[in-house]
Structure formats: C-alpha cells, structure tokens
Length: 161
Image (cartoon, rainbow, N blue to C red):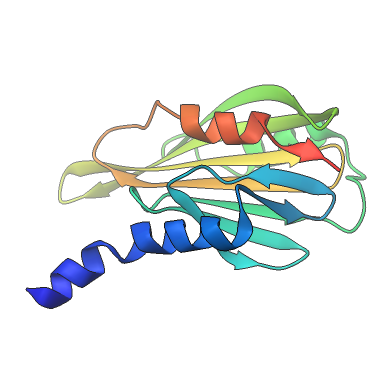
C-alpha cells in the first residue's frame, strides 16, 4: 500500500520539482515552448524535449531540425495522407502560425479492434515551414478523442527566439 501511495504522487511531484528548477518553459532549438503547471520535461537536449502531463500521461515530443523544411507543407500532408489506411486511421488537417511561421497539423485517430472493442489511439503530428516538428501522444481510449484544447494552447503559445 505504501508503494502505491508513493508511486501515485511521483509524477505530480516530478512536475513541481521541474518547475522549481526550470521555470515555466523549455527551449528547443530556436523555439521557447511553455510548460503548463502539471506538465514536466522528461528529456531535454538542444534538439528535442519530451513534455509529459503528470495527470494524464499524455506527451508532447518537440524537435528542432537543423535546417528549415525543404519540402512544401502540402507535399508533407500529401505523403502523410497516402501512408494511412482509411479503414484504420482518420486524419483532420488544421493550419496555424507559430513564431510567425506556418504550421500544419494533422489530428490522427488510429482505430484498433481488441476483442470486438474499438480502441482509439490519438495523436497529432505537426510540421512547420521552419525548423519545428511537434507530435502529441494522447494515449489509448475506448472513444475518439475530440478535446485537444490544452495541446493547442501550448502549441499556439510557442515563441521563436
């Protein structure tokens, strides 16, 4: 019982400690990414950061490429669309500007069948015309995920240094 009690609070405590040490943001390449109160950065280097939500286990992986995107964002969307199987993956495209750069993101819902129950794996892949790539991992659920509001708040608050 004591092990469960300690484990239950490990990630919320980790988030508090991270914020005390690092503040409310992290840097990925030329971008400043806000880290909300219940989130922490699990892995941080100059090139990437993995943000984890201590309440839900959701994660965001932010990467900085060493050079701007050489292919057109529409070409990237086309490639992503061609690689999906319409029976198992649904895509929704949205556009945003981050740090003055166009950013395209694709909401993905991977549908798997487990013992006649549909399991939904939610993710969002984002690509900027600059050097930023962001992926959101929403976990597995028995229903599609429709509320990406916290992720989009983080995404829209990213600033270019």
